[in-house]
Length: 119
Image 1 (cartoon, rainbow, N blue to C red):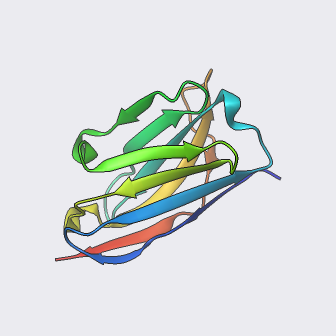
Image 2: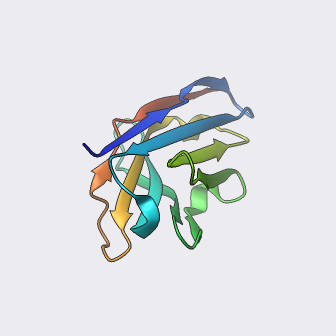
Image 3: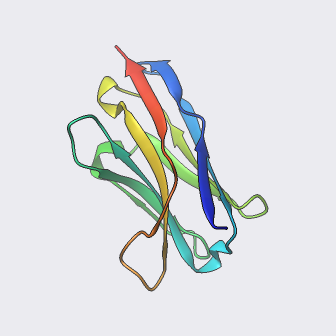
């Protein structure tokens, strides 16, 4: 069974940091791009950052450049989102997602983890 399981969300003060984890099981990620998305209440889902598993190419959304970093652990089949200098507007449910290199659509999704940044 293919699964993406996020963890690491929580409540943090503005200016603080959090690291989210996404553990993938039931698949090999060599031909995948793994990404993080977020959705705040009343807003559309927003792309945050992605990484291609084999090449390590990283793409970041404009709103998180310089603050958020994505990384991966091949041995653990896990992707991480390091979030620094958090702002109240970063409050959202964060989702881990995966798509094949040959696809434009993310078709694997985790259950989401809540991140709340207090001012």
